[in-house]
Image (cartoon, rainbow, N blue to C red; front, side, top):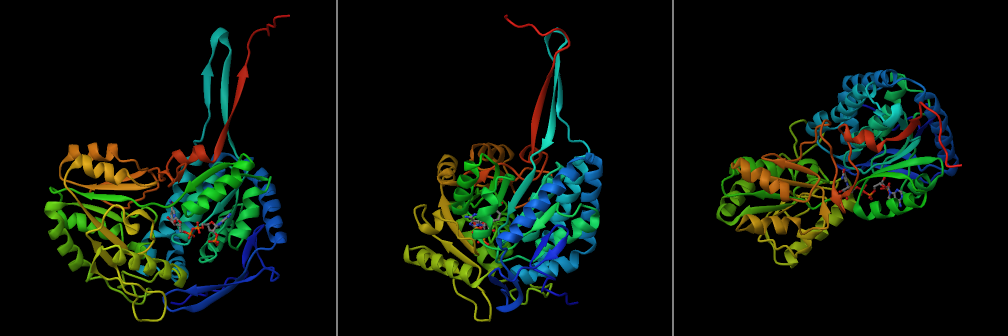
Length: 486
Ligand code: NDP
């Protein structure tokens, strides 16, 4: 079945599609073929103004509802999203190039999970009550922050929009969301769905454009919080701009995460973890375990099984559900990744498989494995954000922990071992926010997600996200007389 990719208009503001052709044109490209599937316009100052004014008005109305009432809207939105999963997945595939086999189970579905989870929590969001000396007492009220801005990356457009909108709205905030200009389509669908589920017009607005649209949103005095998913470089800029206005922030940034395979691990499971942590979404996942540290004694076996299994990747039309490896999101990203591969070869890493552009229209690149990688090589230090896996060998536990931690990033870390105590001991010493033992890249909404060091600030998902979308007002109640020194 085919679904239209050209939206009714570029933006969704105040409960309706909105166009302003004065904004620069943005072409949306299906990366599997290079075909233009939609043409949108960047938000003009007038569109941004309408979105912020609308969000402010809707927030006041929304915050007056009880948590139960707000939660009901979010849970209804989750149901609509699940009912429309196939249509939303096809759109996500066309927007990002990710195989339908993935988008059917990882994008709108994880977005719906977030809407359902935070919808369920909304009714039980509370502050606290404290008894104080002399019969006095105090209470703390959990209040919304106000208007929040969400800025999204291009790898998980639906999921990112939902991971930000669901906790924000559950807490009584409104949101103005700017998707990546590379993947602007699916956030518009979330806006449609929330409206259909009963959210007031203006509660969730989508404005299109690049950093020059994100910039004014971040600095606007009406905005209380900025939540960004993007690169560490953008994170530094956005965090600094938000700090000038003393705004709350959540920064979900990049990574160069370690995946450690000990000699007692199930090699087949470890290879599965390495595939999930490097080639899912063609490697365009922030939490990927791109530095695969393998114990020297099992490295030959690991590489043999890894290359045999990578050869089984089904590369082809992403809309064919048998395909399990798609293109890069864009020609620009493909060029960045090819540049890193060239650098790896030049630095002396051994190319085990892949490494080339695939000869077909669109932004395709082979799944690539490097062996004999050293810690000081560029491919072992910098985030590549493509299907490039580096194998680094190690001899003992203390050594590998020190090497794994020697990164400016700290988003994720994984350990493969059959020794239960070692698994927990090693994870305990790794400096990362989202970790895995005998698994890789699971991100259930019930668990906090986020990084340490240059990988970010704050947490998404789980009850922890509530603290990042609300603030406490404390109230002291004196039961007796007020005493003063004079
Ligand atoms: P970018 O950092 O380039 O952009 C992120 C978003 O910020 C985009 O919407 C972008 O707009 C916008 N933006 C850029 N500059 C500014 C600015 N000065 N002010 C306001 N907004 C701005 O990231 P990518 O889209 O290239 O995504 C890839 C990166 O995202 C990777 O580094 C990856 O690790 C990270 N990421 C992190 C995740 C996490 O949860 N930790 C998850 C997924 C990805 P535009 O692009 O339209 O110019």
